[in-house]
Length: 168
Image 1 (cartoon, rainbow, N blue to C red):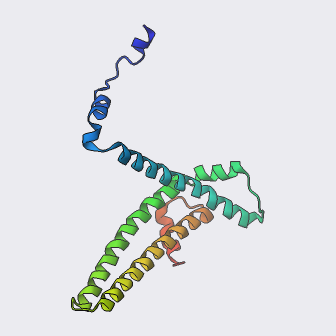
Image 2 (cartoon, rainbow, N blue to C red; image 1 turned 180 degrees about the horizontal axis):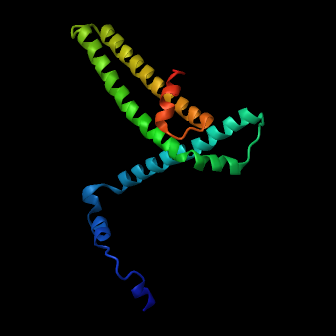
Image 3 (cartoon, rainbow, N blue to C red; image 1 turned 180 degrees about the vertical axis):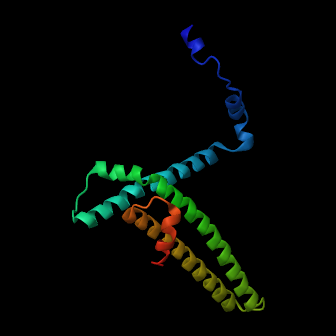
């Protein structure tokens, strides 16, 4: 009798519909894959706060050892700042991809369609180098944003954007 009243008042129709028709919308393996990626990204963001905080503390104090409580404290301290930086860098990656595609299309239009195999390979290598340089710059900017966030104690992303660009 106690178990009957345990979940009284909750409507489970949405949950029942999901488990009844889940194979028509999205497969279980796709859900597990997306969940694993989400957990990995959140773990990366969480642990990178502790890593950057520990590195800065070691440089500032000259110690080679650090405590776990300080590490996980920094993980929590910098999580939301690093999460905002991660979202911002994802947007910049998309813009860099679009810019790379525009430059690559321009190079292909200039080169023309009547190239030899060697010409097509050179255009492809040029495009790959452009993408690599753009993505490397975005990745460096993300690292400098994290470094500047830890060293300056500035909490707002807008305030650290311009100073972090000086390093690139």
